[in-house]
Image 1 (tube, each protein chain N blue to C red):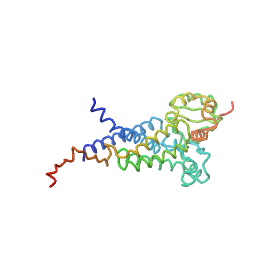
Image 2: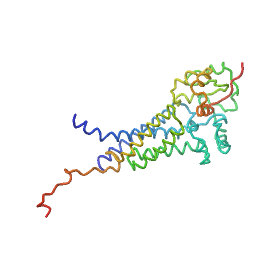
Image 3: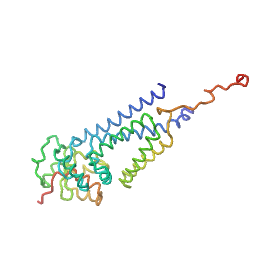
Image 4: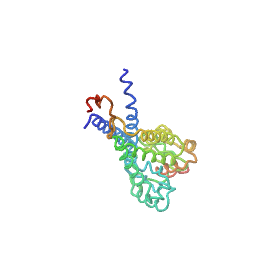
Length: 145
Length: 156
């Protein structure tokens, strides 16, 4: 039991990363399958700047979220991907405002920021375990000569 | 491939399958509205003229797909009485009159951010009071609602 509780902290960032990835994949898939449901969430300034319709922007946004979340779920380039998604969520919160949806999105943004800070966890693709004294044999002075 | 990478790969695939599968399942259960666009040209009133043309073009060929019997838009009457609306009072066909317009909310039931019960409670009746109490003065819900409009409420 003691060994189990000692290992738990290593998996905390893994759970956070996988949970966030799952949520973002869900939203991205939903946007691609039902873009008309999400068109009202596209701010007018986005349509003015890009010249694209809300329908098209929802599709592109869904594709972006799915691709980024797939990178995140497999632990590839966690820091830049999570950082990009954090900025993306900040834009969504700014657009949606402080209603129940926006409040929940703040929590998602906070999770993404935490993942950005933490970086590679034990199950990420680019994880490199730290070398410990048990892995690096300590040479006696006589062996060094 | 190390054991960590194998576990990461397996978990990643599982997460993708579960998340995407859930979204697909919910989309299928909410009706075929997701594959069509709003039956009328009234989508987002706040769009700029350049984008509204695209939206109108996109919706021009849409068909109301919330019920199992799909009909072309031209065959549907444009005004409905409360008696017409009262027939569509359940989850399989949910119409509501809101602020003088008639809306087919069937596909929105499972998509509503505040839960399905809020929509089911106004099926088959005038939902103006409930809508205005919850979303009065808010631009986004009004824009969203406009996409479901199928006609106007006839004065009895």
